[in-house]
Amino acid sequence: MNGPRDTLRILYVAYPLLPISEDSAGGAEQILLTLEREMVARGHRTAIAACANSRVAGELFSTGDPADAVDQFEKRSEEQTSRLIAWLSSDAAGRFDLVHDMSGGFWQHAEALAVPVLATLHLPRQLYKHASFASIPSCVSFNCVSQSQMREFRDLPRLLGLAHNGIDLGRFSAGAVPADKRHYFLWLGRICEEKGAHTALDVADLAGEQIIISGTVYPFLYHQKYFAREIIPRLKRAGNRAKYTPRPSFTEKVDLICNARALLITSEVNETSSVVAMEAAACGTPVIALCRGALPEVIAEGVTGWLVNDGEEMARALSRVGEIVPAKCQEHASRHHSAQNMAGAYEQLYRKVLNEKRCRLAVCH
Image (cartoon, rainbow, N blue to C red; front, side, top):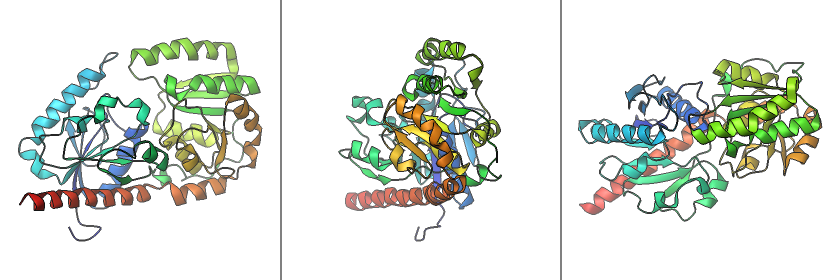
């Protein structure tokens, strides 16, 4: 492997709960699919370990059926891990140069593997259990997805570097920006407490504006209780000024973003990135976001949107969305949020992983 385009054989590990496809709600799943497609386009050989019925560019290693009931994450995670470890402990390990873990936890069980593992940290540190990093397998290295997250994990052993998330820009900016956007603001994503969809409804109510809440409630009881407790009552109070659009397809998502006056991001935790903010910029749609974690790295103030400190500031900022120029939004996305940039960064990280493996083998001999 001497040049930047030498073929690599990469096994990706997906979040275990649900099938992955372009319609997946989770940012980590979307990033995995975008990265794998780009790696295939660059001539690398890929496989993804994921739920049955996942749609991938390379090979699919099915780790079992998706969850069909509430709170099945532990069961699905154990099933995926055991099947994958058994497969990689056989002759399958020789088929891959490295494993890229985007599941959030497979790396913790990789001690016996002969193949090196790169684990991408998608979450803020506060959402990981402290015990997760108490005993790190020797074959595992890590990467972060933003400078903000890198600072949170600066003491983590074998933290190799940074790869900013990216999107397939052409799938969002293929059409012209609508001349007359519809009269609604948009909140889009996984509907759970830390993402703060209830705050977006409160902001729209305070400003007297129309809003669409669109996304997926994952099969966790505490997510479903949050939706019932915080979202449904607010939707009922808002009447025809608020609408809920569940589980949008990729095409529906792009239409919602393109035609929104602005996208609202109301996270209550430090975001490590924001795929939906990148998608909005690619569509020429402004973003108004609570200033959390890495969002200042993704949102260019006054170019792609505005960063605010609380719901009242966000409500006041809704009147400023006309100051954002759609073409400049798209230009910024093109320079900073491309899948090509992301894939290039991961190619460099993969080479670091393989160089470290060669160094370890040289020392052993």
